[in-house]
Length: 482
Image (cartoon, rainbow, N blue to C red; front, side, top):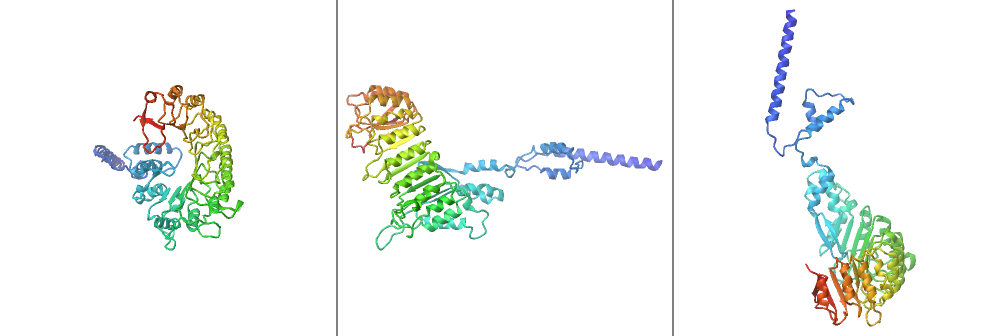
């Protein structure tokens, strides 16, 4: 009996000592100040040090474990504990906005993410796709940088963490005149070659969406056997996500003719493009233009064909108007040696089918009369209308006053208006412009003489701007006061 009493007394003393130690530890932990950047103990470490933690995996214990986890997560959280989506948002503040003057767009460049990608593997997995999605090659060292880039995409050293070519979404190459043929003194294209383009199609085709190639004004090629022919067919088959194509100074080969033409193969098999920009591109067959219109279809929203040659005609423009109803941006012009092909038939097709047009620039449309001009009020989303040669007095085709008033009253989103309207811009037209509160630029050639233009433009909130390069006696440019 005495032995049992002794054992009970010892157990009571041990229990009291354990209770005292636990209370002391809790008091110390509550009184000790936490550093503001101190990491909280992970849940699995805290659970192993607790004497009352249950190691059972039964479903009955899960609510208690979840509650303990919520209590332990009240402490400060380190940056390594953030979700990838939140880290990606933080990294976005290191981006730089770069304006593309060639295509009139703004691109987001992540060139400052190089050090971030070296911190740890998690950060590298987040930063690398952002760092490699834009690849631009300009300047005198572009050729060397392009070769280095292709070696990295091929993963030649077998030490790279990623296949960097899979991250590329946009490539821009501007060929420079840095290599000169000493025999004939002509500039030679040495960067955009078949080998280079084939390597890009092979290693950067997974996510490539935007391609810009600016060719040097070098020697033209005419047959598929000659060096320098761009494999457009391979581009169409490999890059199935390509949606934006911009070419400048490209001289299309003459041979082979028909469906075997390389650029025609691209027009047939490419993914429907949303933006097509061709500047100073020559010898593109007329059938290729029509095929591009049929292939792009409803996907095409931006069409820029500047300094085109005689291969682009009225039939081709009508084809684009009929097959591309979602067109928003249209900018077309021809070389000075080529007669313009925009007439009333083309404009009627545009105003009938492309009702969401916001930007229209037809620099050489000198055959547009009031017959088609009076249909422009259908374009309720129109913001920019540039017709600097339409309705000139040489053709005797002028716009009626009613057509101008209807345009101003219907297209209330107008921001820029540039046209020729001899004898039609009266006081009623300027009163109608009051329906356009967003008007920023107004250019009118051959204004009516005797009109109180200064007072009228002040009413519109516009200030006079004198164009020093203008040779036209009655051309006035007005812009919004800032």
